[in-house]
Length: 238
Image 1 (cartoon, rainbow, N blue to C red):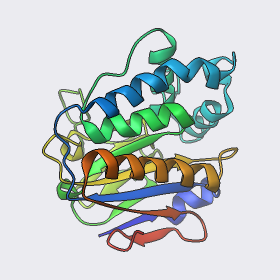
Image 2: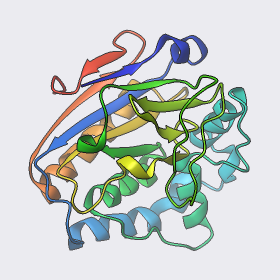
Image 3: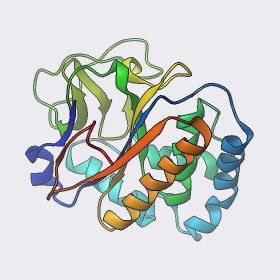
Image 4: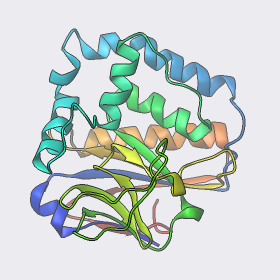
């Protein structure tokens, strides 16, 4: 099983950086205090990270709004995962408990203002690509949606052999590959576009990996993908 940033994405977004963690043999059940506390702490500290800047104008969020516009999505209607998290907390809301790994990457995402997401490795069919959607992508049912719909041609998607597993780069993932308490093997990804570079993405994925080891057990290996190294075998991470 491989993860690849395809040339079609790198031609349009040449400075794309992905931080990748492959976690195996984890315990994703329950709601341990250390995980919940870290998420609440990240929420409480968010205003200091925004430094009084409007959410839409913060550099870490504005870059994704511009990326979405470039592939034809309206960021107001389809906010990136990091903008969605930040807006929810900025309005006084909290991020609900989902499961250990999701809570961990949500906390790190809020702390770093970087998009993060994950998929159940055992639900993935074949290799995974970060690519540009074509004209005849299979319909996919996204989290929280009743009916499957195909990606729009030209949008950035993560895709395996069966179809899209996340639409509009990091907007919303497929129900088919979501993490559950039964997940034992997971693929976690942190994403960066300028002004965010390799160093920040690497620090974020390493922090996620550290917390997964601490709170979920198992083994966790990490890697960085970019223009110079756009592909990795997921058994090779580390």
